Length: 438
Image 1 (cartoon, rainbow, N blue to C red):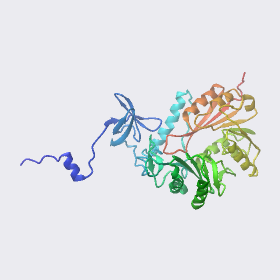
Image 2 (image 1 turned 180 degrees about the vertical axis):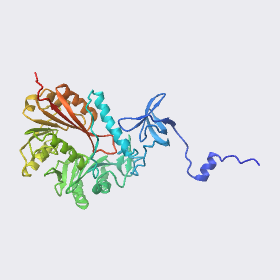
Image 3 (image 1 turned 90 degrees about the vertical axis):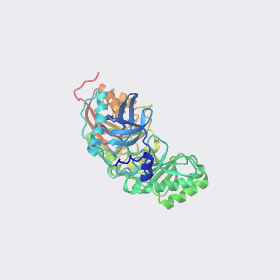
């Protein structure tokens, strides 16, 4: 008896109720890029595929040189199951599919390769995990693309909102409360239907919330938000840095001091990250009598350095300088801290100013500190401790310093941006005591 023909695609779909058409093309991932995307070489050039690993065969849907992952056909042994249920859609994390050892080696190699390209041959020390209890600050987005309100994180390479009920990489006190707070604020401000970015920081005294995107408020809206802050038990609520209500000072511990940073100002991503960076900075500067802390923020390094050294802190934001000075004056036992509000991109400390210090600490934003590095390269400062959140600008600025006579002693990667391609880097540079300068 002849065998029955195999079921048609339509019959299979009817039977299983789960058939979907196969779309896209199949490629092999050859390597990873600096942003954690897998790279496949094709006849039309390289294609970047997020959330893939070298050696994997995957089916993709391509849009130019970018592609969406449709399916993993042959998985790498370095692949593991992401712990976050939103990982496939959310753009916040990029590496949860990597096993830990592979992830560490990849991230460290990115830094080493960047230094080699800048002709900097100093060995990179083992990467330090500084994730700790998780991110102490998150930014959620509120959007109104249709008649409803959407609250969550952005999808990768998109303005589409991925709704979340919790964020597993945030600190325990923040991971479930952040979406609740963002949604409540969105409800209060939805009348204007403006896109909102809501930054929520977990402080010692409660949640500090700064809302961006709304613009000036009516008096009725301000009164409504004051009532909401009380119901949510927020420590402080601000709009574009303008404080609506401060029910308790949102305090951050920095060494022995307690600091209340300006609303919406910079803060290291994790508590352990800040402590780890500060420990290397203070250790390197241990014998320095006078230290310049440049791009100092509200003082995470200056307030710890002042336990042994006199410090001159420089930052463009006057509010940060005021917060640092107030914390210094309220903390007994610290050596003198002076502050200066100054734009170091436009007005870097000049060589004669720098020569008054035994050590200089640099912690610039992602753009780096090129202008300041050039002044340092011409100075007689014995020690520079460079802290950076961008490997490329770190390498550029370090090359400037080494061309001016500094010797790079140590390069220490600190992973406080876990599950992302971002990495903090500490470089310790010294002048040879015997080197004579012209």
